[in-house]
Image 1 (spheres, helix red, strand yellow):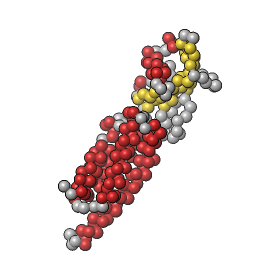
Image 2 (spheres, rainbow, N blue to C red):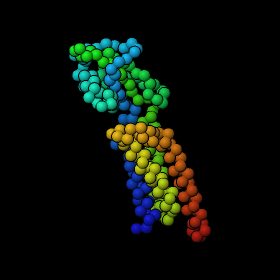
Image 3 (cartoon, rainbow, N blue to C red):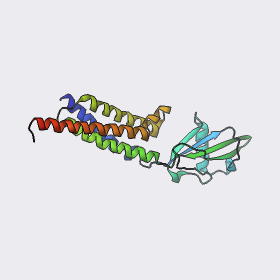
Image 4 (cartoon, helix red, strand yellow):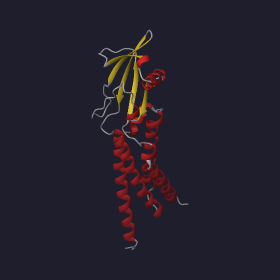
Length: 217
């Protein structure tokens, strides 16, 4: 199989994965909540609880956060929030201070900080951007299957699409890449989408010019 057709197939595979992202990456975007455990807090706690009086759901979240190396855990689904804790959302594009609760368990005292992902629609924007990128990659893949095209353009866009999938899979499931996951943010997705649209436009122009010169129309 010719190189341009191999690349076309690769572009279509990546396109399908991008188009299907609402099924496996962001089926419930923006319903991400976070619980952190703090040893101390200088402000006034929103409420004081004893561990024994917390609901089983709240106890589970506190236990998981304390057991985590980072001292924080995330969970999805607003319906899974325990009634004792409030998870603050704002329209800002960064994490902001949520509610802090003072917890007593025996002789131990600690604080629980509850936050939610921003209400700006970060994950919704990621999902929509990935879907749009999938549409462009599908069109580009069809062009590469149809006739020879510059391999560097298709290869670059295919690589960028694959990396965005990797970064968003890590953000969604593992967080193994740490701060590198910012490279999968919706701003980076938007810039990649714009670059892909420009690349697709050039390929369409090039194809039409070659067909005209060949007398195909």
